Structures are given as structure tokens and as C-alpha cells.
Length: 349
Image (cartoon, rainbow, N blue to C red):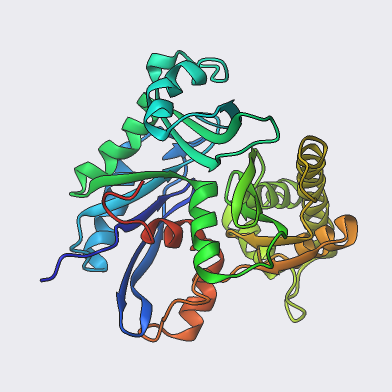
């Protein structure tokens, strides 16, 4: 069997695990394997793996069900244990920056520097400040990262790449879409328990932020308002936006209220970006994540922020002829991070 070029993308989310394997031939990129499975409640809490056993069991079943033989894996992290900062440093060579990044990071990281893994990405070798350059600094708590790597190692995968959810979404987006030169766009990934924001100008990330609100917020509020189970609330949530679905008006009102809250948080983040950046504010917001399809969210963003809104299809330019269209359509909203990770390869930096 020929060695796989790409890593297996493994997205361990708050409510489910997604795995994705891409490959490439003369036709271009194609989807070789994709699958996802729900995690038991409480397995992951606030982004932390609180009970590794069901996570390991779920990932092992996904690996077996989809006959994934490639052991090289890419994973991603996000949340409070991850710090992403755009910093400005004196102009220097990459090797010198690599030597100095620990000292630079100490000024921005609210953790003991010995307790984190550090990485950086050069955004631009020039800056608004003469003789300086802009760098994106990423720091992840070592024990938090170890929890994730030990889980996939237990299943027989070798962690080759550790990314951040926002950058995995960026990777997926750039592989599928083109934006006009100079245009600023916002990628918004509405996950189960958090929402990742990544603002790109000329295809380069210039601002990221994680919001502590996501798809589960809709479900929990519906469950509380109607005194029903989480499963029943989830079904009602997904029915909102379907003209033929019989959804109580109080559910629609509830979903609209949460959508407006997310929009307000998104607006605040973009206002902060606009106040601290010389670049234009985003004229286009691209939505992905499990709740990206909620019409109430799209309409709230459009009406309150006056921007174009598009739901991202992570398979837009990826050949998926081995899968039914209904399968792709159902899974596309929540596949963004996994696809972005599956575009990485061993040795990728």
C-alpha cells in the first residue's frame, strides 16, 4: 500500500468526534473516508477530556468502521487553554525569531512559560511599525495537549500535527473558496460549546477569538423553556427554519433570542478588530459548524450587521463521488475542522 500523503484529520469536539481522510489523484482532491460519532455527555467538559475511556472507545470504533489504515494524524485544540496573540516584534530572521520566541511570549502569555508548548507563524515581514514584523503566537498548556495526544495514541494513531480550530477552518476555507484581493472576511465556526472567529485579510489571519457560546446553548435553552429532554430539544432546534416542520412559536422565539446573542458577541469582536486594525471590517461572513444552518442565525447576522453571509461547504472543491449527496449535505456543516486537518501532512509546519 502506498504511503498516504495527508494526515487523518481527527476533530475531537465537545459532543462528537469527526474523522476525515483525503487523497489526491489526477482529478484533484477527493474524499476517501469521512465519519462522525456522538460522545457520551460529560466525556469532554469545557474543552477538557474529563473521561478519556469513552473518547478512546468512540475513536477506535470510527477507525474500525471506516477502515482507516493511515496512522499519521492531525488534531486541533481551542478554548481557554489556548492563547493566540498577534504580536509585533523587531525584524529578524526566522531562526533568530525561533530562538527568541520564548522570551517574546513571556510578555503575552498568562501561564508559566514552562507549562506551555509554543509555536508561531510569520504574518508579514513588515509592520505598521518600521523595523518590525507581525507574528501570530500560539501557546497551549502542555497537560491539556497531552490529554488529546494520549487519546489518539491509545487508538494507534501518531500525532504529527497539532493545529488550532480557527486555523483548521482557515485551511479548509482557503482550499475551497477564493476571495477578491484586499477583501476582509470573517470565518465563524459555531461548534457545540464555543464559537471560533477568524478574520482574514488577503487570505491571511489577522484576528482570532473564541466565544463561550455555541449550538448547545440553543438546545439547553429550549430544553429549559419546555421542560423536555436534550434529545427532544435538539430535534426541535434542527426543525427551526424548515417551513414544513411543526415547531412551537416559543421554540422559534427562543432560537431567535440565542441567535441575536451570538450576533451581538460577534459584532463586539468585529468592532474590537476594526478599532485596532488598519484593515477594513469584514464585508462577508462565512458560517460553518453544526449550527451554521440555523436560518435564525444567518438572518440575525444579515439584518443587524449588514454583511453578506454564506454557509461554507467544506467539500466545495473536493471530489465526493464515493458518497451520496444527502450524506455530504447532512455532514458538511460540522465537517469544517476535520477537513481542514485532513489537508495537513506529516512534516507540515
